[in-house]
Length: 122
Image 1 (cartoon, helix red, strand yellow):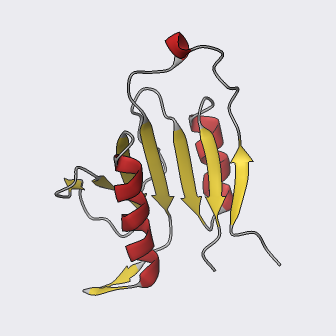
Image 2: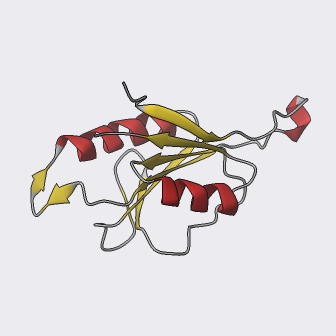
């Protein structure tokens, strides 16, 4: 049985509260389209639910290949197009990558201080 969530890279734990940033940034990378036209598939609903949950503890960003332009939803989650250059937000706390170990490796290289999780939806 395959694990649904794999830890791809873990950052060194901060030893004291002073080293923790005053805010937390979370990025979800969704490389495969989760929506076709106006039909929303369950994977896209799960991404949205995860983003809203993470947004309670900081700032949540979703980079996805089917996103045409940057936009914020009513809860403050920011959606942006996924491109070869990953977005930079200062200190990244954690990155969740859906179904793509290549993107997880890119995220680990781009955000060496963040926890990187590879989430298998299929």
